Length: 72
Image 1 (cartoon, rainbow, N blue to C red):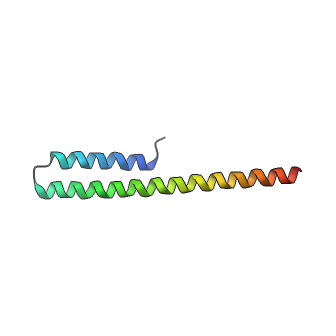
Image 2: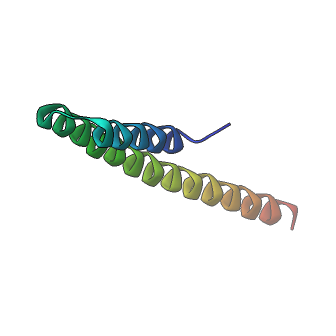
């Protein structure tokens, strides 16, 4: 399964392509604003996933340490 931030990056790329294809300035600007928004969402999602993975790893380490201590 793809990560959420990858979905957002794909939408940003679509918006970039839309901006390139736009002939009207206001339409191009709308596409470019959309690209910025999707890119920011992708960045936030990637950071959140990184933090979540670190928390999961930390909790797993804590559980392993507690298990080792209880077996000693």
